Image (cartoon, rainbow, N blue to C red):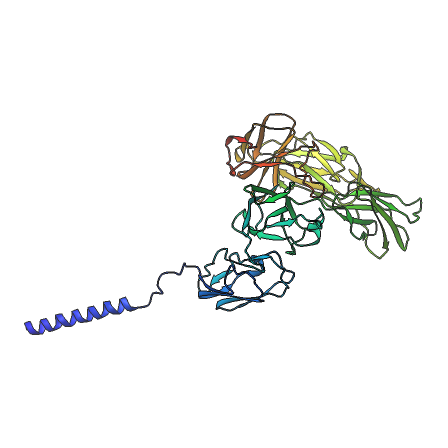
Length: 538
């Protein structure tokens, strides 16, 4: 019995050992690969001089692939033709670059791959890999460093191009509109710091562009720009700050369109404030006409009482930009716009909200006796009604009490438009919430060199303005009845006192007006009273 027991015992041990060995030997995949691919060889060698090849190969210690290489690869100085890169869409242990340009003599070139070279399995990037060569006898080694920021938004855009133009006999202020720079780098998507390397001694103009077309030249209609007014002399130890802003484009008129039987719309780009539109066709005296700016849009409407005509001719002039255009608008069968009113609020309305009835045709007059307002107890509510010509709306102002309901009845004939049409009957229901559903914020603005006037704004986290207060002198800024949310606070310095923020202009060497942000979002909670001090730094 003992021998049989020992035999069973040893047999069980052997089975258990075999099971444990089997468990230890089962594949688990091993630790996750977190290592970036390593450059092990380059042909020709990195930092080569007297470079005359048209192909470059970079070899790595593992299989790699290219990711967003067209976005990430920055070549300085820029090449006219984008090089061919392989592999595209596959894995390889090397990257091959085929240069299609004729390279400049005695020039140092830098290829910065950003984070476009990643390993094939986990996508770990070889960050900021650069390949440098010179067509001359030495490698240029000077640098320019700095930071970019946005003039208006809290965070700067990603992929900002930072550019140096050599100031020589061919350089003018308009060069940035016409040709790529002598040197270029990119902030990519992870930093606002830039470092232009492998530069030669000289005098330069320094720019930053949000280069939407990726053509290395400034397009005023689409690109943001930042510039340093003074000439940059290299070598330098200075750290430069480039502030990006979107210019107001030069005025230009789009082709106008007959939008309805009684309306022609003139869309425009840029500053249309000084533009003058005149019909040069003969229009019968019986036809009434008027021009009206479209609220919140870059367009002007020409309204007219319909009549039989084949076409209309207009001239458009702009004194500021010395422009003159002539447009012909052909008639076509199309319906006429008729008066329709739409309420900007239905249902809930906040204590600080304005109530508007917006018209789609020009509003000319109103009769407040044909407007009635009652609360939830069917008692009449006092209100004032005025025409807001900028918004083309009837503004109805009244005291909003908490936890109240209101019914607004607009009777036929209360509003008359340009065509002598009147409104149909309209009823709008509104209601308010409790004061306890909202929070209050008091902001004190401080700073060593605080200048007035200024505008204090609260925005949501997407940068959309929720409230603003304009101030001519120091005060406590009270924002009451705020919806519970996180807000960004900013101060706009209204240097020219026109009650709005003004951007800059490169050719006129005008910097945008200063904007300062509170460093962190401010959380407003329901039934809270919050006080904050906003210290504006110089």
